[in-house]
Amino acid sequence: MDTKYIETIKKITTMKTTLKVAIPLFLSLAIVLVGCSEKRSDCTSIPLNLRKVARDSIPYSEFVDSITYVDLETSDNCIIGTISNIRIADGQIVVLDDLSQRVMLFDSIGSYIHDIGSRGLGAGEYIRAAQIDVDKEAENILILDHTGCAVLRYSYDNKFIGKDSVGYADDIVYLGNNTYLTANYNDASDNAGIYLASTSSGEIRKLEGCSNGLPTNKPWLFFYDDGIMSIMTRPYENRLMEWKQSHICCGFYCRTVTHLLADSRDREGSNESN
Image (cartoon, rainbow, N blue to C red; front, top):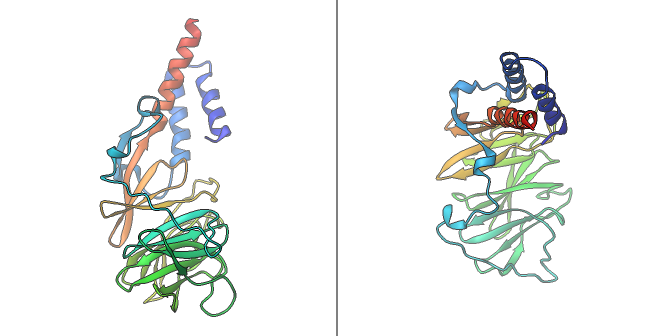
């Protein structure tokens, strides 16, 4: 947690004033920390007390039905440095190695097949592979070229198909119908946000931004759960967004701030009694 944020909590909880004054001051700070364009009233609010729910370990059985371990082949042709993402393409495994900047294709038992694309400045080459995805309908593997502001398409047998312009993006997820959700979190704060990019119309539309002045070099996270496309917003915003066909909305808001205040009051009362 940000040290300035912790110090702010300490200062508020040690103020020699009444609780009636302390609570409005703290809540005002909370609004600044989590204030963004989406109204909190549109969210399902979830009280979250980390001290009560925190566990050292969580069994896989709570959130998966079965687990299969696949040992990826390691040879002179496919030495893996750092796996930054994995996608499944018709039973084949697509691996993005951030260290070597390679995208590798393996079969279902982990045997290396070949690379997808290559790094360079020529046609069909990417400069900086930041993310991968799969267009299952077209049977294409998608590589986000962060520097080139485009998504390069390749067939499963490594034929270059073409590229889609998506603007400056650090992360993507393919929605189908030549449409992408993109996240920009390393740009200036006015440009940081989540965008909808339509490659058929060429339109790139900003869906969600943030104007709370927080650093912008922290990522949003895209993930699926039971077919629902969800987006975890940046740190300190405490919101889970959901994709609704043509727009995103606030799905859940975690009210951790109120528990931090309650915990702080408990500790202060305990210290005074001692």
